[in-house]
Image (tube, rainbow, N blue to C red; front, side, top):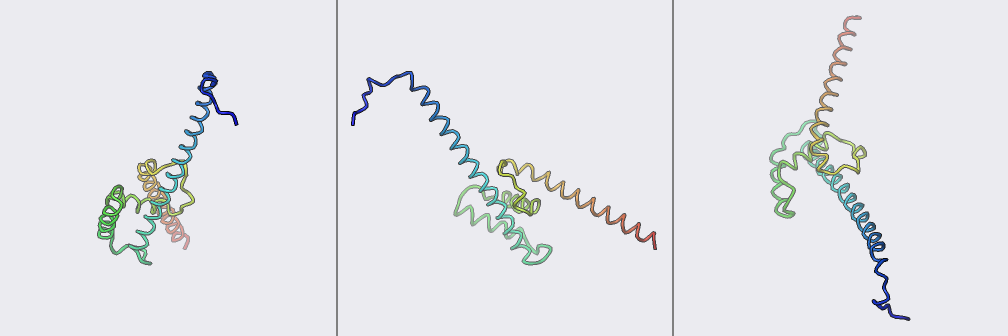
Length: 147
């Protein structure tokens, strides 16, 4: 087998091959970053689900919450260090409440996108509930008037 001689290397080919390799690397990193972001969003959604399930223990309303969040925050921060402040755990909890179905989450959005959107999701859910109550109330009023 013939050894490659650096003196026979055509310097005009280097920028082209370099650019191709660079593009492959950038695309691979982008896909990897997207996959990690998607998994972390689902992970935080699951945290929220687990917190709600523990708080409610089959009841429609939670009997406690602040103590659970505080203790989880302390333990998770001790073991994993960053990202588990009480405020972030409350966001995860509310994230689950705002999006109770995991299949509605979009893989294009990261946790950084969902956090500010969470307020909009909560407001939209409250508006939906209030519209439902108004509709129900009007239906009840209409039904009473027909009797």
